[in-house]
Image 1 (cartoon, helix red, strand yellow):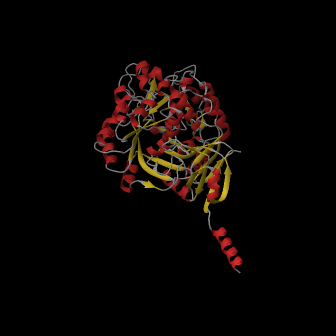
Image 2 (spheres, helix red, strand yellow):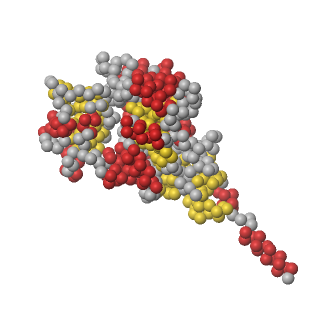
Image 3 (cartoon, helix red, strand yellow):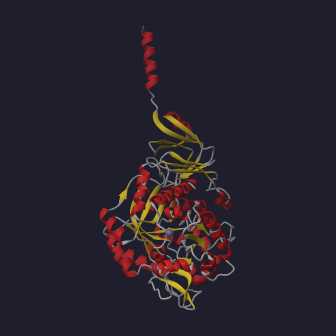
Length: 545
Ligand SMILES: [Zn+2]
């Protein structure tokens, strides 16, 4: 009897103690770059309820937890879920409905692609984007002549790669009511022999947008979902959309709540009177997957189309300074408005004149404050004496796109000359001053693939591995810095570093599995790195076939 009792006690101890803790998922056999403070590595992690429960070594974790599911990473590399700190997700989705003109090597090729597209889709209004006359033998802006003869009755509007210039045909001009007498501040309607050539720069483009076919709710939803799919495939788990209106932000929120849209989003609200009115009253809005806590403002245009506002004339166009889209006074006014709210002010600034106007406005409005994390989007050309503005107690952060450097390097020097180019795409200098730097792509202006960002940041080369020594290599980031820029520093720029951006206990189980160890692999292999799987909230949202 004593023996039996002892046996019963022994069995009951074995079955309930040592009781294993329940967990949802064990990821094992991986090289995990946690991107924590010490940049430490691990080989296994345990996930429960969408969060990281423990990080460590497989045998001890297996002993400790009763695990529902195990995923064998087969020795591959895991990094925190990648964040694109500046992109246009909705824009990408809409672009998929337009003619893609990226990579065209001549204007003839542009025409060929438009013809082929229209043959297939038969759109009432042909919209395209992505041409860049700097890539052609003839580097002059094209004109509407050929489009007029090919499409006399169908409006055509083709935006330049940077989105700051547009080629349209006569039918589109007519619809928009643009004549030789039309004048719009903040841009240009280029004329020749008293007639519009078909090239429209910056502000007057809005006259054309007003005549574009209406985008229905179905079209918007489809665009968001298609763009999301592409992002998940490239290992992105959070995307910062740099400029959305209320209706699209609310659409994302509903799709996420219905679990149709898994990607996390940080959205910058477009600076319009209706948006200001609504969101400044409402205040910031945050769920686990959506963060609405910034406004996007445009200080100037782009460098390629010479719309960027420069202190001195362009080196390749005498007397031309580019133009501010939002004047320095308006920037000051907006900054004062945002400074008394919880919203960040995130301003697009390319030229050195635009950058200093933004930096001054920020500094003045944030006087006496700390940690406001207002962002300078692009921070592209900075005068040497202005870099110091970024050392301001985390009030001002740079948000840059390394593939812009390697796309623009072929002609940026022509625009600004040998002296000013030294302060252009100066990521290392910005990092040194600010203490962190958020990296993104600006897709669909550049490609979505974040591995191109990583490569451009560390090698300062494009996909042709040009130039051999790297473009202004002094401003290259180390691999660790680049990875931080795409994870924890991007999260910091979003005020989200407590919940994402690194693989640490208590944070969201967002991570990306790569087929190469990007911290160690040969530099030229970096752009060929493929995503094997993407996890958001502990759920696999993409797996390579
Ligand atoms: Zn952008």
